[in-house]
Image (tube, rainbow over the protein chains, first blue to last red):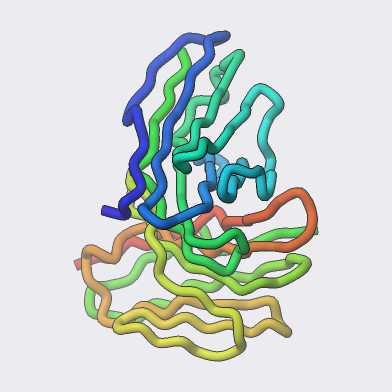
Length: 114
Length: 111
């Protein structure tokens, strides 16, 4: 158990819908990262927040947005969902903001868009 | 550009030694990570190299050559539970992509 929690574990929804994925980092960690993992593309970095502020941005679609709240939990919002958004979404956390800290990954949310 | 290359699949026998290679091209190098990921599960941290050379940690060792843009993960005394994907990852300090993960090497350990 990494100490990172994600809800829900599974999510099935229809195209065009909007969903929210939630992540709570390990106690003491200030950084939260979001990743998308699909079968054909591996682990893709989406976005990082550090202590409530956006720190780094990867290949995140405009239909996707995220935020980190004062209690450090984070939410990833996916809207106008398409079939291609079906994937495993991981949240990870680390102590610091830079890339030199190991990341602890949550169990993931499996999103299926039908 | 920024890129990471790893072999897609490898097969080895229980008790053997296997070396998983990773080559990378990035700007603003800040070290290289190896993660292990069992199918359907979350990645877990294995090692972090920022200086050239070999870092040993039990049955697992990781090597880095910054001048060659090359790293490898060495797994000794293979066990069935080592069957997993091994991801090479590089954090960068410039460009749009902050963290680049390789597509992973799927290792199958046979009895």
